[in-house]
Length: 433
Image 1 (cartoon, one colour):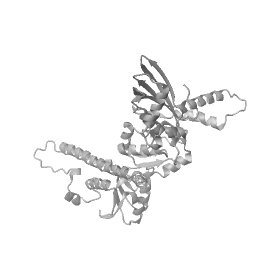
Image 2: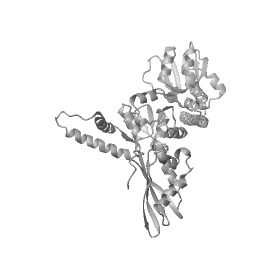
Image 3: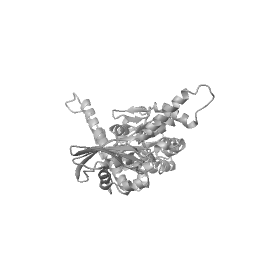
């Protein structure tokens, strides 16, 4: 079966079964007709074919005993996400011509992989046969051979076999990308703490990683990138968002473009506000509130166990135990001491929920309160601050600013990517209080 040579990305293979006799034009007509208007104007098959993003649909069928079975091949020049959505739409076809029909996607093949493998294999053969004749390979072929070496660094993470960099198990911060080629491109420039979600259905392993790591979501600058952002925010704990320039994909970025995109990554809430994603921002805030409630519930459970263990053998109940997460408002006021872990924990809960930060002097008196999103700038106006408690992520920049202001203690819910910390400043996150 011939494939349109102009399409160089993906090949959708759909298995087709009908309960009667149909012909190739019936199948092609059903594909166009029954998907029309289903995915909106951006993914309309007719428009995509006119613009050259979808190639000619090839059909190979066989009719036996009054039934027709076979395959339809659709060459796609779209990205991974859009190709997957288009493939899923084909499975909604339930009639072809006058017959009932069933369509199942057998696979979506990355046709570029085969081409790239052939280039690399041939390059290696040429290199071995060069001898000492003084000839050299062109820079592009040499680069292909080097890419083969870089591919050996990529690992398969978890039971879901997700493409990832070799530092995914040890790095405190991770970069989540769309596909295998994105991981390879970042590996080429020495970025090894990456993992791919392989589509919009976020894998369980990525969800689990996001609970304990600082997560930067690095996506393509197209509609597919927006879909992944929305999906990730619904099911995972994302801290920052970075995007490729409009119309480009992470897998094709240069070193300079990658560094720039990651340097100017944006906190999630700020990104949603600046892009007018009101509904997504609302869902994100609701998720943060829910997660905060879960933290309180877990803390409550842990402390009940702790109290139960401490009271074992003390049937008279004379030993008084204060439950950290159930401390009343009046008790919190009584414990208003920045050196008391109970006060710090309760204050972190409150600040995490309200997305705020507070600064205290050496007498445990609050002297300023700012939104987390503006904290790094506004904190520079504060004098005589000793302790900072923040409901946000403790970043390297924040530590540097606090150190220059003479801050001695920083408490936060989560640690960002911190590479250096002065010896005379104390930085503590929730789990270590």
